[in-house]
Image (cartoon, rainbow, N blue to C red; front, side, top):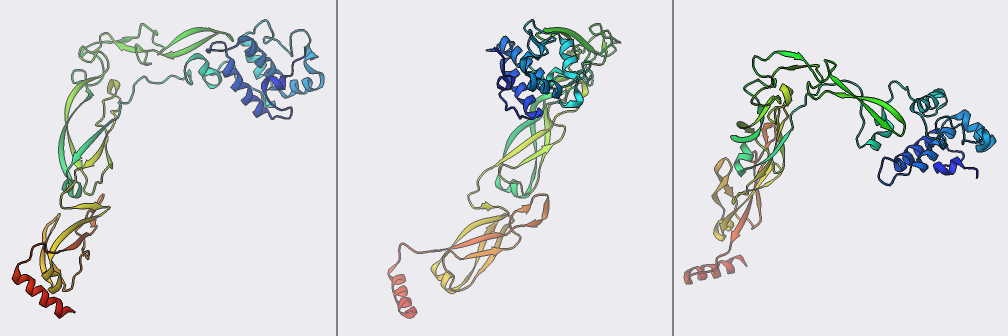
Length: 376
């Protein structure tokens, strides 16, 4: 029975080359025999269809003559028919018509990670040599500070258990005095080559040599303290400068105070987020500070001078006569400094609460009754 390659790839007959390529990649990923639930027969059928439709010239021939164009082994099956296929054939066929928009690559430089990386249990792999040295990991911690420390800033010391540079080898990973020799594992190449056998055939891959980290050289002896890592776990005291105006949940970064890197590579960073303890007298609203002050009825009616507590200390606030409960007075520049701009501060908003007496003496009651008649 003749096969419909468009149906096999799940595309319309007028599909673009890009759509055909995307469909092929998706189906090949799904049915690859090395994956759980993969189907080798279906995978070969998908490849066969793509070899026909992924090349404009072959696609035109297929559209005109159908699958019988190359009878007996499927459409132009050189390497992709029912007998399996050869990697070099695959490379030659796929790269033969690069200018016509088909799937193409250079057989020498082809990187399986681009198309089939997920088939073999990994992400994209490259043959490019790179240093095995790794930047140290970042560290994130949370610090609890009090209300005024958040307002004005502070300096604190913390003890942090982390990976620190090895003091025996200064981070090199080499035992002091040890000679540097050619790596016996990679013979100085810095990379180790391996042969893989897959459904595509046999091909070679190269990976960074773990023994010498890609340098091609290693010490005769690794450091006896860090065992070649260049770092050891230790407790370290760190000075923390908390900026004025820091708010709940905000974070600061201290560069280079995370975990030390491998073999003297760059250390990670320390990130500190802040929790601020509540204050019984003040609340914070952005850059403003809120508080309440109680006054008695007489002071509210006649006016008075009252002492108000602020984060800068007590100040005298003049209360005009006839002040109502809930009246808010603004103390300029007594609020929270703007983060990293301490010269700019918010305000302190003081709400006056007129306190109504619950117990009144006989004399006080008489005075209030007279006052009531006077007010009315």
